[in-house]
Image (cartoon, helix red, strand yellow):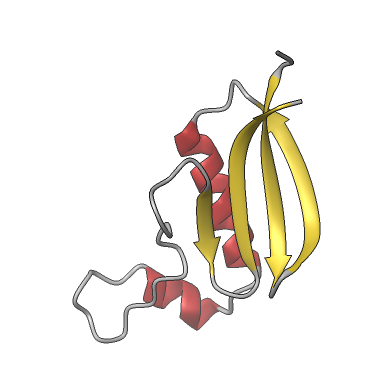
Length: 88
């Protein structure tokens, strides 16, 4: 078995348009923050502000909420980002 790395992929519709790797020693929480920051790079200020609103607020956006709860982490809509821990 090789070393573990976090593989982060940027998706635009069904196309993979970006790819990065981080050491497997990064925590899941750290990778989650990276994914959220990447999503923010594609948002305008108003969308970021609305992501910070409390659940139940009619103006709240969910761009920075995780999608699913499996081994692969996913954030964003389009573009969207995934991360998973893989063997290199």
